[in-house]
Structures are given as structure tokens and as C-alpha cells.
Image 1: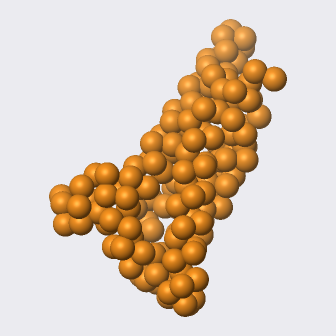
Image 2 (image 1 turned 90 degrees about the horizontal axis):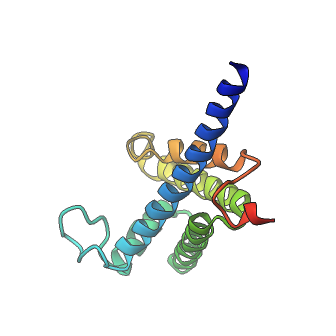
Length: 151
């Protein structure tokens, strides 16, 4: 009986880590697609930014404590990291690094949102939950169905 429960737990962990990897990859890429206008122009229903300019305005609002020029660089770095982490999670390569990187990015987003807009927005957008889920994903030792597992 103990072996059956262990097998069920192992299968659950394998499924959960794959689900989290794919969910993070799609979510990160969707946010990037939004700021590049792929989901539609600004003002379209369910579009947050719709273009890079509106995203920069939002990003600079969150990063009010730096100059707009430095804020623009921070937006580029964040977007680049989101794409890199998404691709790594999608293919399961350097998964632990990508998961912890995503966790750090989510914590930075959540803290920036909290300081700039208050406690409610990062809670409503589940940014803290995403950070916790990324930390949990980074805590797993084996990523079945990944390039990492081929070693």
C-alpha cells in the first residue's frame, strides 16, 4: 500500500511540475504578447497594454523611483527575462534556474506594484501566488518530461 501511495505522489509531482512549467511559460509569453500588441491594440477588451508605449508608461509608474530612461531599460530587461524564462520552462531546460528566476521576477513585480499602487493590485493579479508557485517549482529536484531529465 505504501508503494502505491508513493507512486501516486511521484506521478502527482511529475504532473504538477509539468503543468506549472507550461502555465508559467504561456502566462509569461502572453504578457509579452500583450505589450507587443499581439492580443490587439490598446483599448481592446482583455488587453492590458496593447503596445510597447502603454506598457512603458505602466512600467515607469511601477518604477517611479528611477528616471524614465532607466525605467525603460528595466522594462526591456524584465521583458527579455520573461521570454528567456518562458522558453526555458517550456522546453524544460535549466528548469530550476528558470523557476527561481521567475520567482525573483514575480517578487520584484509584486513589491513594485505594492509600493506604487498599494497592497490590492498584486493580490488581485495573484503575483504573490505566482512567486510562491515558481519557488515551489524551483524546489523540485527532478523534472520529468524535460531536457534536464535527459542527463
